Length: 122
Length: 187
Image (tube, rainbow over all chains, first blue to last red; front, side):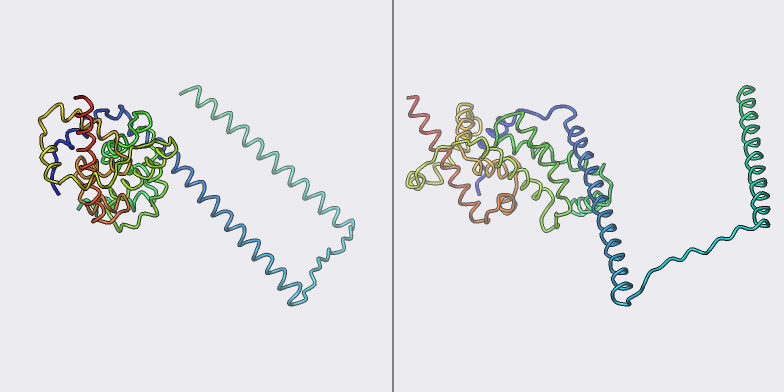
């Protein structure tokens, strides 16, 4: 194929417009936006997939237990009987719990106090 | 070497190193813009389409199989983007009859197009290029300006190598006829 230099020169003259300053950065900004969109899309697809598989597994488990194995799901609550002895233990437990809470509160208060003093000194 | 480097960069970009895409923008934004501006002939449109080309390339990077050069793949995206834009604008190009083209010898055309120092000819040639259709403009831009091989041009434009050669000959004849017509018109 012949090299027609006149065509090359004419084409070069037609292309006299150069890209503006910062054009590459402009494209890169758009690329970053697209990358973020891509990342969000793949995250959403991943979450959807996990959710779908989880629901499927739960449904399969329920089906197997309830229909295939004819399993009857029952939750029995134990009967609660309150005696004077248990009331004493309950009162003592409450006393200990309140004591622990009060001590933790005081500890936190003094720590903050010390921290403020240290900040003032520094 | 270049092919290996580009393949490595593509792999790393797909693994999350998005900033490496700037390597391709630095390397190809100018030639891609040069091709698009020849097709759309408008500065703002060319800039927008160049940007679109790179964003599309980034979006579809995972579909790049590596069966051709990255530049060929990128040029193909740029060409298709520019062609779509010209279709939307419904640009009309003059059509020359087949028998007129056949009556001109290649030697006559070459003799005229080798006068690279003739300023008048260059100006007429610039105007004649305007009358070419999108494919013809892309063809001569890629072959003469970007100095791509006929095989690469064929891969970018989705043609066969023989078809590219034939179309190059026809485009040169078309340029010759357009210039000659203008000469007669002015005389």
